[in-house]
Image (cartoon, rainbow, N blue to C red; front, side, top):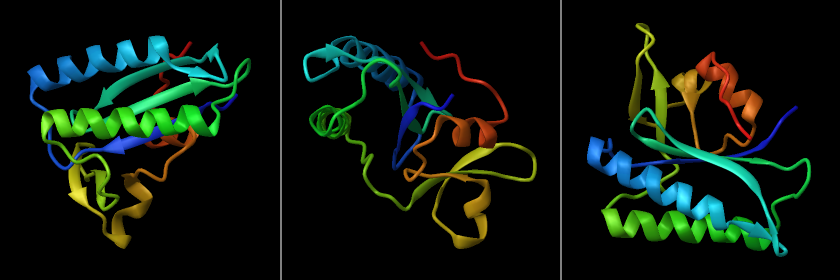
Length: 136
């Protein structure tokens, strides 16, 4: 089963305090997130201290255009509050030879080992990370 996934990669690494703040704000946003008046089952987390990942279980309620717009507005507002740009699509997370994920600029040579904002599949994300993320 696949789930709708959004990835927003920052222009810098989060501090521990920022990551805690982001996680709290994300939890609050997702607890109130709705599509056509119906609550969406979703989880979110910080990935590698440099990205936001939001995953919606669309089996019961699908994310509508308006609910997706809400995600983008929330992420943009969060970024403005924190001085972080989540919308530069050239920021990617890349796994190096040692298995360490780093924040880098897009390079066609590393695209197969990169987590990008174009990633919209839960299964695709898990295959890159080689783990299973617990979702609702």
